[in-house]
Length: 498
Ligand code: ATP
Ligand code: MG
Image (cartoon, rainbow, N blue to C red; front, side, top):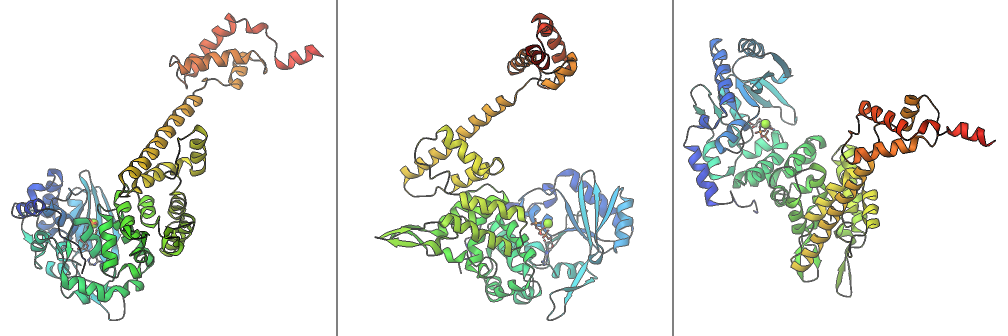
């Protein structure tokens, strides 16, 4: 099972270990730690238990990132939670999901979400959990997906509640289902994708029994809503190691039920007998793109049409039209995932244009630069350049350098062009109409000398482009100095000529 290696280095493992045996609260940003203690005390005074739980605790233990928002679980009812929040001085209290018993609160230090202990009972054959308020913290932790997400922290004492040995899995770098893996995945198949997301984001391996259950349950992905799948894939792609995530999706058979075109890139040779296949190239490109959603999707899908466009002519492999065909495929794939229209448009265009920037062989002429900017559009050009840079993965150094140079040159020239255009945008603070109003007369050749002089002053930085009052003073002076009063209006001039 290619569920990948664990954390990258020995050092990472050592760091994790060191952290696990220190007191986690000391890693907590002080204002948030204080807020947690204050809240826990407000609950305790009302006979309630309040603990931090889920991602916050996991990330604190890993020192992965410091939390912005806090997720708590409590024995108090939603009503009791509201009362305790008010007692703790919370100004804004809102309900997130009444049915699920989640109450939100906003404090100057950050946002909190507090959920009454739950126990979920699943009716066989139904995917909707019958949510019941649980009686204990243990019940609440038992219904969570993975051991590393099922650890609670009492903010007052720093005590960890870890009935499923999540800490040990954090230390070993393992994603392991709570309880019986097969049951947990059939209760909610979204967990199949969540396992991969956490594994790729944290650099963890998937524990073998959990991985086996994922492979067995993969087809169940087809039974959940495309929106849930979409949201999970988006989060996976935006993570720090998207390629690892996609490789896992393919290895575990999840891609067949969420992104079936992607595994087809496997074993597609780019060139006869040499070089890596389209799949590994795609993954490299994906990891090299900055974490912007359209760009990551375009990275994943840019060569998606290579399998259907591959031809071998006289021992040479070609993929004619894979850019345009790929654009259409991207539209279909993202449409099936119910992605928003704007994202679909963007990715479709990026895939369709992905050869443009780095296919340019010669020097970038002014007109070539203008043409590509006009065709691609201002709002897309940055993403296209980023994709083009990421797409240069060939093993041949000379070719790689040549393409990289061409893309860098294009980028520089676009910037140059933009600056020129910005200069063109610098104009007189007063336009012709305003000058006519100022001097109470009609249009005529008397306007140009004033406007030209005002524009020059703006370009020289001696007059603000918006500074109308100062411009009026200068205009009056010029009007007098240049004797423009004597110059007739256009209408008057025409009349004079009749
Ligand atoms: P992230 O940092 O990505 O938000 P997280 O662990 O906070 O990670 P959330 O999706 O915010 O993930 O969920 C919060 C917690 O709720 C999880 O840590 C887990 O304990 C529980 N949870 C969320 N979704 C599920 C699910 N589908 N099945 C079981 N437990 C879940
Ligand atoms: Mg979360």
